[in-house]
Image (cartoon, rainbow, N blue to C red; front, side):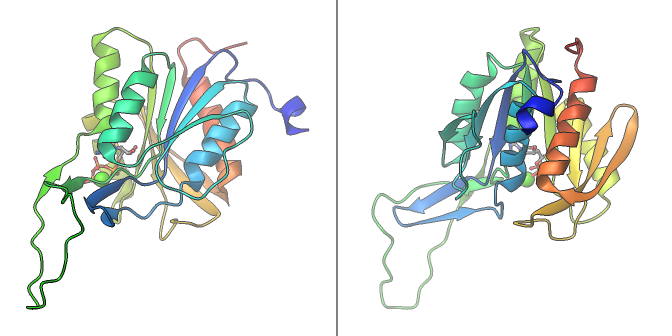
Length: 228
Ligand code: CTP
Ligand code: CA
């Protein structure tokens, strides 16, 4: 029923959403990842579809069902995710970066499983920084004069407003959404802080689906040519 009563605020929009963690391999059986259930990103994809958008979801490893009517591509590593989003963002009008991208990946992936040698020696891991996917996509769209409305998320442990505003500017995106903690990971509800050029506003604690629907409305009214 929600389909008939939801205003089609995103009709005609091509919405791309990233969600979940990335997984950075160490060897064939091990890796490092971030804490992220993917619930917020999946809820946003669902809400954007309800609002009449054409929605594609690029998901890291999560165990969540694909929202009805949403296209989904599964990825693993940050580099994987970057490549997939880079291609899909060419045709998108809105990009919502809800994924918890690993900031670093092991410098080398061992081809074979790393074995204990019995001496008690531990392996040393070197790391390299992953690319900032969101900043790169926003910058490419700007360079190509494409109207792509980019939305970032911020996970912070302190001073959310200041960090979120600085992050928004650094990434060159019009809207950054902060999780008002503590401990939103894997929970079904959350509260959000919206930070844009005008300042900030709060979406009070609610289910992730309710918040996703409100966020979609907030994005829709910020788009350059709002649909009627
Ligand atoms: N992000 C990204 N690529 C990365 C890291 C983050 O696209 N390599 C995106 C996330 O999807 C999110 C936003 O950038 O929308 C902010 O992520 P966050 O981890 O909070 O910021 P970082 O820039 O990684 O800074 P830090 O973790 O040091 O606070
Ligand atoms: Ca990070």
